[in-house]
Image 1 (cartoon, rainbow, N blue to C red):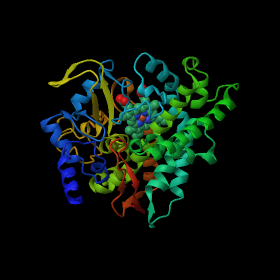
Image 2: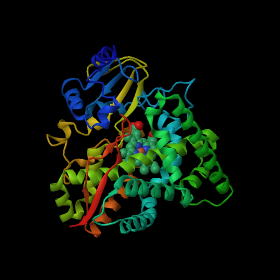
Image 3: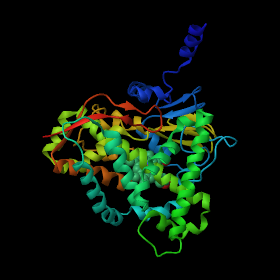
Length: 412
Ligand code: HEM
């Protein structure tokens, strides 16, 4: 009987349902996406753990959807394939999940924290911390790159951005890991635990806010938000929601890019040799690693009206998953070697890992700077990362990343 139930369940698995977590846990997502791009770049999946949805898997399709933000809303159904359920979930108001005009005003509140001049101001601190971290690593001895380097450096970067109390910085990681895990919606107990962490995060930031409210402006995100005009239109919940957005937005993504550079360059030794021989390739290599990894596999939109998308009829209310992870391997844009890391790929910067259009990642410059500094400081030490075993991967179709990556560093 148990075998029969299992057999029936297996027969019901749709091989083109690319929302299945095991595809990412086992690194088996490439083939179904290649098939989708070739045969059905806009494809309707009727049954999935997240209900029916359209898969948009080509570069062209995603750019079209993200260029029409009024037709394809971020607000109507949220930004991940997991639906928001009013009686079950607590909505955290964030501008990533708002449409115009509210999105425009709130994004403007935080954008000044990511200007080129702010990046220059933060770069010294980030470089010093990165250098200290690399100098503390053991040579020719196994350790886990994810926890020791990728998580720690990302957490430090965010703590600098928020002027967050240094000793408590790992709280940022904890809260963000809980906030960003879409698999949690499937488990009631975990949902309750997540809520408790979000309250803890909210009250901690309330304390930081209170400490800065009557003070002169300082160059950190909290102070910037307090002293911006748009802030006067934001209530406490929106302030906390947007802070959580900034932590979550920068956390897994930057962390998994830093793990990808270790794993990916080891996997493509010719590219690594080229980069080691010519560090001026670092800026392009950063884009290429982001393209190859695509730390957020998808974002979601909801159609606000009937529409046609690449020959398919979309109905008002339909959910669309925009698979950046697939667009970034689109042969028609990146060629037949799109699955490989090519550090001098001429159009690496065209990747969609940061999205496209009005919601394109506001923290992109900061992430690129942190990853570039890590590569530069590694080059300065002639440090090579050797991967000792396959990583364990995050089992989810949203955050695309690594849980552990055993490595050893050596000199080249
Ligand atoms: C938006 C990716 C780093 C904050 C986004 C979007 C993507 C993305 C795909 C959404 C675009 C859309 O919905 O169309 C990444 C990647 C990163 C990264 C791959 C690192 C490699 C960061 C950092 C921060 C950040 C460091 C801030 C500390 C945000 C925010 C938004 C956003 C606030 C919302 C923008 C809006 O709705 O206007 N990011 N991100 N991200 N990201 Fe990032």
